[in-house]
Length: 355
Image 1 (cartoon, rainbow, N blue to C red):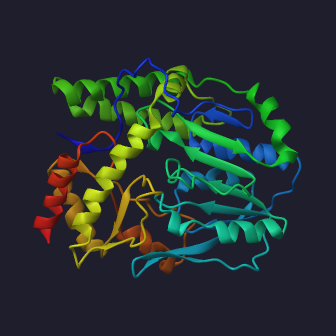
Image 2: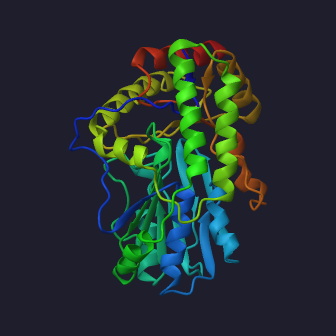
Image 3: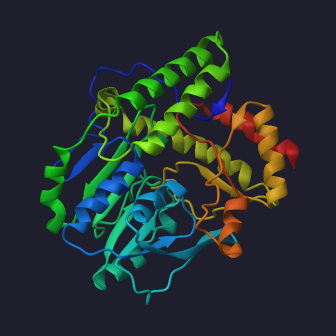
């Protein structure tokens, strides 16, 4: 059995669940999280002059593209791992037009509510990325003007990004923007084919991995070049409308508890101490090690068909060495609903034996 990497496409239950994701008046389902950021800026800029962004130093490079394409200045605040905690070095006096908040990994104890509300009082626009906290009880702050998320990280869907507008000034604009959305058929067809081929590989092992890996890469290239004003595909929207979120949350939390039962016995691995199993549903469980040790463990896992990602490669815009440290030390442990507690335990033992 392989653990991690891209989702594969499965048939979904046709019985509609009440615990699902359905588009509402102030939200729109898009192709990707990148699409959501880009569309959000078009909506915000109609009524606000956004020139300067205050952004976390720990982020995916793709999140910066929409700001850079509009020639907006980006200043970074530091995000670090220290003694079992995520620490934010945020200057409350920073002069900016837009404050960008992140909910890392879905841990409610490390949310940015204090900073969000402070910047709102100063009259700044707030965009909150709730990708990592999407299935936690505290999904986002109600004071955030805009909420964005990448849904593809959570579910076996072909495409999926979420945009929510809470700013009344901008609420009418989202209805107009919905009319302008298009389909990226080339990306959808290629990604769907890749997911179907991976399903064939996972269940039957009748094809080579290179076939679907190559198609995933081709699809990613298309996404980088054509993501603006692209809506979610129909298949993915149907999956989200019928999916049972509660079942997914329950499965993930069981897996996370297994991972934490292991981590709390370790002395050489750093992890986030403050997790509330009654509220938090992590996207991944991050661990923190010296770079050499992280790569050693990661390679061993790959050799055993366990593919734990890192978040993220260092963006070119991050220049300060102190801001790069978390990129070099973090490894995201897989905890998702595709896997049983026993499968999670088996790969935890691989790490244990590495100690």
